[in-house]
Amino acid sequence: MGIALSANFIRPGRVGGVEQAFYNLVLGLLDCGANTTIVGGEGRLARGMKENLVARGAIVDSKAFVNNRFLAEEMFAATESRDFVGTVFPNYYLPMTKNRRLGTTITIVHDLQHLHFPQNFSLAKRLWLEKCIPHALRASDIVVCISDATRVDVEANYGAGRSRIVTIPNAVDWSRLEIRDGGAQPETVEHPYVLSVAHHFAHKNLDTLIRAVGEISKTRDDLKLVLVGQLSNALGSGSYSNRLTETIREGQLENVVRFTGLIDDATLGRLYRSAAVFCSPSLFEGFGLPAVEAIGLGVPTIVSGIESLKEVTLGRAEYVSNPLSVDEWSARISRAIEDPKNEHDRQLDAARVRAAYSRSVIAQKYLSLLGAGNKGTVG
Image (cartoon, rainbow, N blue to C red; front, side, top):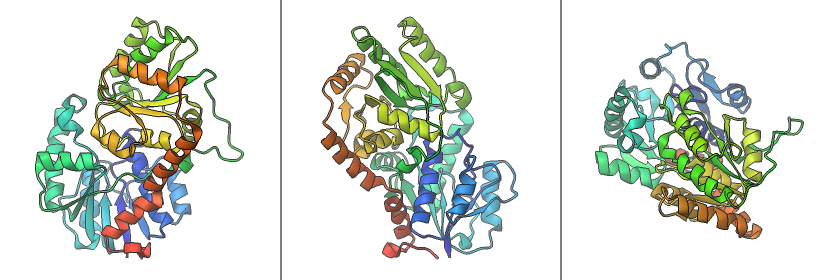
């Protein structure tokens, strides 16, 4: 018997870091030799990803289900006739339909953003989360939270439920950020620059970072700010991108700040490696993948001093105690550029982070939950 993972939640490029976390986990399971089946309607996986996973040995079952994610999940649970040792539902929702053939059911809860920043969600989405999270806590065999910060938040707001709640962080795949032999050379930014990677949601606090870099640019006109991530109009998250544009206009920072939108992995990797400093000014995270990626590439990294980011960066970043303070951000960034951590220490930080979040290490934690222990395979 193998392990199944539902991909029915994926809308390529529109579900944030959860999509990449899913791919990283699947690749980790394949690294461990696990018999891995991905279930999801046609078009759920990013372009080229299906072929990549099949080439690695995954079974990709593009069932002809309805396009609606939740009906697709229920139909999968109701009609599946294969026996799995376990099934992972990677994005909050556990089907109401029970099917013993699915084996041990694992539901992943990433964060409780809908409670802390309800303005980012429609009323329907908030009501849905308020139904499906308690259901997952009652009916899943195991609920996985991607950080202790999320686990504590879940237990404080919903109680422990009947499910076993454990923390397993996201897997990180640094290999996707490499430039492949024969591939096109991604564009670079010639000036020294601060990098941030975040979709344009208000809680990402990018306006504070823009103002902070704007303050530095008054005395250092060669410094740029590069913001990678989906604009808010493509996310259905309101007008936050317009607010950022207005902040840039008010500060006359049109020649300082650059939006890239979504970019390919090789370009993102190049931008990470060439950055003078990486910053994550976010006010709320369940995990914070870009900060971990940056440290793993040896980039000086500054993040908000919120619990989740302090946890997942393993103490290897610099922490801003008041994430809304333009002055604190500008001072931290200036110091990081003028007196950066030495190369040796940054490489030690990178090695520790890579060891903690490697695909196979994280996948093995899931296999252990399913009773595979150190055998490394479910088959």
